[in-house]
Amino acid sequence: MIDTRTRRSFFTWARNLAGMGGAAALAFPAAAGSAAKETVETGEDYYEKLGVAKIINAAGTYTTLTASTMPPSVRAAVARAAKHPVRLLELQKAAGEYLAKRLQCEAAMVTAGAASALTLGTAGCLTVANNIPTREIPTAMGGLKNEVVVQKAHRYEYDHALLNCGIRFVEVETMEEYQSAFTPRTAMAHFFNAAEEGRIGREDWIRVAHQHGVPCFNDAAADVPPISNLWNYTKMGFDLVTFSGGKGIRGPQNAGLLLGRKDLIAAAAENNSPFSNTVGRGMKVAKEQIVGMVAAVDWFLSQSDEGMEAEFRGRADRITARLKNIPSLEAKIFVPPVANHIPHLLLHYDQSRVRIAPHEVAQQLRHGSPSIELNPATGTKEASAGLPAAGNTIVVGVWMLEPGEDRIVADRLHEVLSKASKPSA
Ligand SMILES: *Cc1c(COP(=O)(O)O)cnc(C)c1O
Image 1 (cartoon, protein in one colour):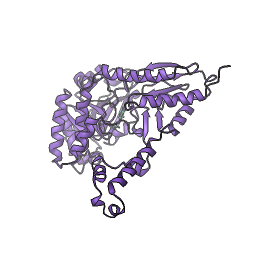
Image 2 (cartoon, helix red, strand yellow):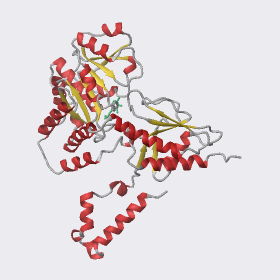
Image 3 (tube, helix red, strand yellow):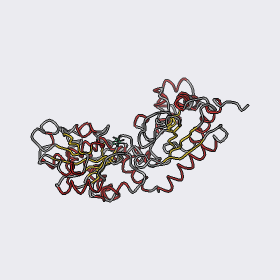
């Protein structure tokens, strides 16, 4: 395996030395010539400088793996935006109006991720329901409308984003419980779009909440593609919908979308940076990320579901073809139903013939060069993110691979699996 890190640092070193023309240039870096200028413009490789490993992401849009990379058009827009100061409120407003038009909803705002959109959207609902100054959230909620109705099966690892606003969850399971859960203190109804359980569907959820004049929030953070989901849920009647900006849409990792009703988005914005005494002041989105989010939406809308699906299946097929002589290996494509709704490659084999457990394969790929991360469902007993429990299976998330990386993943899998294969007698 070629160590690209070492090779690249050698080239950078050699090029800088050539451009500097010897020791005199070292003492006077301002005169260092074209190579140094190029480094200023293309940027120094700070991952290399900091000794941080670059990985091949065969996992998916996982936050701890920095989720996604921005396509070239988005990176260019971010770099360009970085060159000029603007008026932040003017940029926020213009970006929101542009996004609302493109995503066919009443209003939109760029947030610091979907989790931040959950906090700001909830704060918006509380501000409107109670007609209070934003500084009162979350500490002065006593005696005010602060109840959020939710299905028990929709309680999840992002609850805290809502609780940050001083709300109290009211859990329901049946339709009957839901209908009688509304009180004079109800401020919002919350829905987790990719929940695998829960008896009340989206349309019923909206209808009942609206009968009580209560706004409905849908967390659809990881639920594109299909591209049309960006407008499906607001059109269905959800008053607020969020998508993560740094997952399938491939914007900056610290960006997200809050879409929905004009008055609620306006109230959410009042609770956001740059307004200082608010729950959202720490959720600042810089001009680069605002522009990056808008550019990523433009990029994503220029794609097609069929095109993305064909590309991801192509990657999975190339990996499968490379592994065709691994004994007993069976390859399958699995598409999770809602979140991460794209083809994943599942590889199953007989461990008496290929003597290595899937989690050990993941370890070896992680510690190899280049370092590869397989999907964390590999070799686990727990289903997650829409993927089935995969105790005896290798799961390759192909959608966040860069062009050409499927070949590197295929070669490494082939290397590790063939080494562990029992030679045929
Ligand atoms: C990823 C995710 C979030 C958080 O998104 P960020 O953009 O990382 O803040 C919230 N809710 C769900 C369901 C998610 O999958």
